[in-house]
Image (cartoon, rainbow, N blue to C red):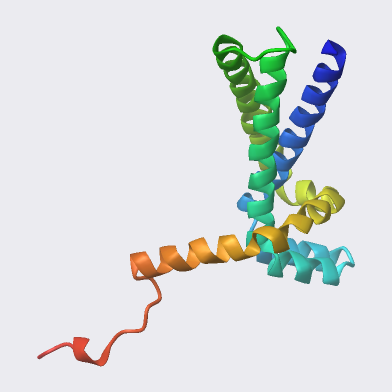
Length: 167
């Protein structure tokens, strides 16, 4: 049982680190840069897709990172005693998972993404497409939060006629 938990944990850590690399690389390079690089390499349809699906793909990557981190916490919480989860085991598991998450999904992912931002995205194309299957599921929620935020901040709202400058 313990070896299964370790295998699941390592898989979750790898998925978390890989999605973190892709997310950071996409944030470092713009959708236009990614599209241009894909067009140069002979994949204009991929470039168009990544430009259209940029924001939903980033949100899908972030969701997968959160889910894998939560899974890592539960794996570490189950390691001492697989039958029961105590508060101490959970805190211990959360602390270890947070430290490993920080090391792999923040430090190492950041270093790789800074070194090869466009290459990280291009070489992870199939993983990005696989995770983009979440896009339709969370798209309505992402758009809803964006719209509420836009309205609450007053960004891009049309100016009314009554707010003309008086000379």
